[in-house]
Amino acid sequence: MCALPPPPGRRAVLLAGIGSALTACASGRPNSPGGPGSPGSSGSPGSSGSPNGPGGQGGSGGSGSPSAAFPAPAAWQPGPGELQPDVKLRAVQVVEAIGGWPPGGQGVAAARQRVAALGADPALAEQGGPLLADAPRAALEVVYAQYGGLLADSASVLVVCRQWVAGPDGAPVSTGSTVDVRLAAAAPRWNVTALHPADPGAAAAAPGDPAVRVLAQPRIVLPPAAVADVRSGQVHGAALEAMLTLAGSYGFEVSVLRSGHPLLVFGADRPSDHPRGLAFDTWRIEGHPVVDPATPAALVESFMRAAAAAGSYNVGGPRQLSGGRTANQFFSDPTHHDHVHAGFRD
Image (cartoon, rainbow, N blue to C red; front, side, top):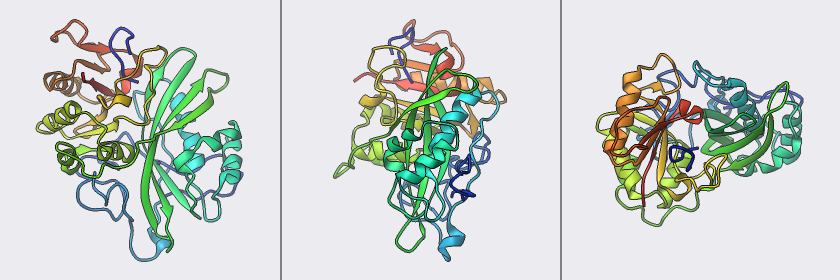
């Protein structure tokens, strides 16, 4: 969740069976440099070229035997530095259970059983949207789980996914989504209360510049929903130009652009800049997760200041910075402990 400072703001490890408590998903170490989705890497087997091109985000992957080529990532686990990591893990597990299944495990009824095996509300499966493809097999990888909001009794976790579904020949076809997972505080674990998958909309007939340059820039790594956002033509030029400017000095990975983000600043009634295409969030810079305590503070700070210099009127991150063109240009709160937010004016 990204807001103005003071509140104005998808390889599956095959399931051992329907009753398995966990589905397969995610990279084994999503917060380590060089993992799937790092700058210069598409993060998916058999893909090539720009990480934001068809081969990396929506083409078919793998070659040879479809069975041997089908992705099989490990379940996502929180890395160092996460605030309330079990909240994120709970959100991720529900998305993994819905979006990854073994041969013959498709359909809402099977997804309900997988979710119920987690001790979560099986009705959540019916909110899986694009993750519930009509395919005999699917695998899902979580790129990152980012907070869209974190309060004492409620939270939004943005589960950024890549998904592979079996095509007509059984080979994996790459797609993906970002799911805004809502949770409420409970003991012993928080409860998942709702899922809101991204809805980027149709691709524009002819994406303009700078959208074409962003999609071709290997130093800007976008997850599937963000790629679709750019292709839709609904991301504002100011945000795209700022991303290109930042790519002159940094390789970085975007978690969320427009779709898959809460419509309102979490816990407030103000519209978020994200759904209007006026913001982007960055979760990894030069291979270093923003949330990781081992990431040099100077790297995150310099990126935040560079985002401000590139035109962002409010830059949020894990630490409060001084200076800025206005008193509120830089901000920090628990929600932004795991990413850098850059917002722009229309």
